[in-house]
Image 1 (cartoon, rainbow, N blue to C red):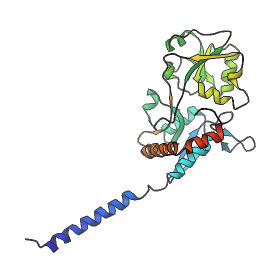
Image 2 (cartoon, rainbow, N blue to C red):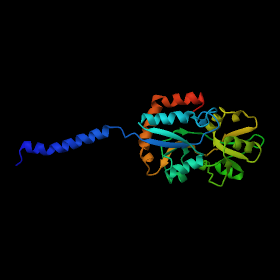
Image 3 (cartoon, one colour):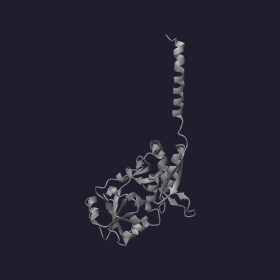
Image 4 (tube, rainbow, N blue to C red):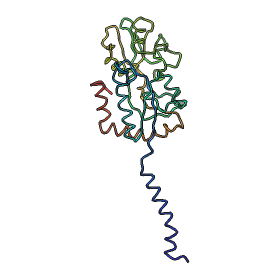
Length: 264
């Protein structure tokens, strides 16, 4: 029968293996460099080009997300891409993350999504001299609507092809509505509110009316990555870091610096 000393000698390698495993689990993940794409807008607060240095990106997105990744021990480099190209670049692995994407069934086929970053308020915008009587989002198909290129309107019950999505900027979109080339546009209230920080406060324009779309679910905004990618594997840690930034108040401190009193 083995002696006590012999039995302890056999257990010693196991103890060392367990100790090494515990040390490995306690160490932070190796630092990595990631890329994230987003499309700059025409002004603050989210993401826009510096008037004096067009290559320099400014705004909440340019400050908050790289800062969050640094706190996780990683680097995040922003890539300026039109939104439709951004989604494609992420789905093919050319870019690691897309920032500010709506979640819909089509995108869920190729992308993994973070926890919701923001929840927004669906609205329909129209000319006051041509008001719409909406009882359901299904009614939207009775009129000619316009939207942004590459944007998702699935929460309004509108599939690709249901809208004229030729506009590549909100300025062009609003001009089409004002000139009567569209009966309406659908967009979230918070999006149009933040446009007021730019050259034109559209909500203050006397010609523009708006109201709720009664049964349209409130869309959520996410960070997303390609399924099976290293970026997707980081998503649980990213969700945890975002929750910490919310709890500590850092999220709102950065938002206020760029958006003032606008709701997040």
